View 1 (cartoon, helix red, strand yellow):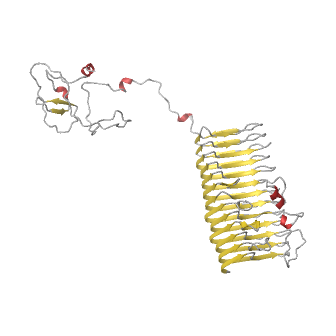
View 2: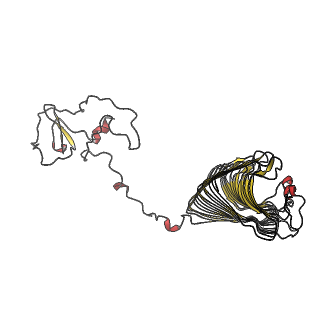
View 3: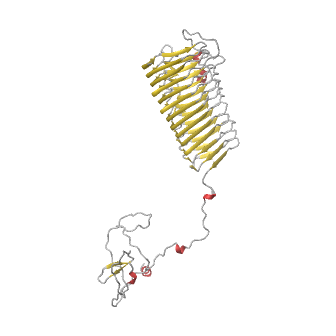
Length: 561
């Protein structure tokens, strides 16, 4: 226990089990813990906290409680079960090939856990939290609880199975048969993973893995906000005959975005074909044969963008895994992809349950495919609306095998002209595409009438001399030509001109008319002109008659055109 703990230049807290008895516990309580750099003389030993078993006894469990944990330049918190181990002064190695389990690691950090980079003196030593087994024992489980977890520049949180390291010499029989441990991260605010290391260009990762016969463990991540950036990954993978594990992610807002070098940000379960140097360093076979795992993502909003991906891939001999995504909103943008693929086996399955909307844009894709003789995988998509925009595609394809099957349930499907949904095979039998639930049932059609309408009751008479009229105050400019047009200019105020009148000789004769105010206001429908030139608006101009004046009518107006 200490207020602040600093471990540097190979300084460590360790517990080594070299006999048949089980190890105890390592407990560290400090407000702040910082570990950095390696031993400059023996670079195999980084700074940090370690639990190791090199015998049949189980390794010690490690419990760390702090507000802030920082690991840099290759520093680690780790546990291991070694069937073979480096010569440690004062430690007598057991000749028994049975090995105990590596210890579990629990870290509780009130504010944050941060791991950054590796060390230039030993680039294959990465900062982070890990547990491995090289024998038949089980690797330790990792349990992390904090507000914020940040992994950068190749840092790692991982548990897995190794056969051996080239630094430890040639492997012996019985290596790598144990099972990998599980990784659980409970983050209350933000998990951010991104950036490759500057020396070996490996991704920052939260992962489980197997490089031996034993299977990898499972990964569970619970976090409100998850950001996997370029050079970052959450993965479970196999490089040998063991199977990869299952990844489960529960997040409110999840973003996977970007590519660094040739490595996209991703969530991946895969059987991976590593380069020759990596295979030699970890004594891996040329082609992996273990099965890929399964990925389950539960998110309110999931965005995959800028070349990033969620994938289940088998690059060796075997079948691809399954991807299951349950989301309210799922967006694939700018080359983002969801892929289940196999080089020679069966293409994987993709199951998408989207409660609100699924949108692909900017060359994005959802693909379940197989190379060589394998059949294409199956795609099942259930979403109210699906939009495919900007050369985006949904594919279940194969090369020599049969194309996969695509089953879509949606109320609306909106593909652009350059987007497509295909289930094909280049040399084999094409698959099927089935779409259900579109709103195209015959019951929604409107029955049209067979009888022709009477146009005389639908079209108003063009001009009637004494038809009822309206007087509307519109201000300057008058009425618009049609309700759909706007005024192109404002008419100036002009003096009203007198109407053209037809005059005949004789005296004026008027019928008497009571022009007294009415008890109610009546809209004017005409006008009369008094002998003194005064014009008066009246409710009915048809009662005014004169031997020398006649109201303009349709015929008289037509005759003047």
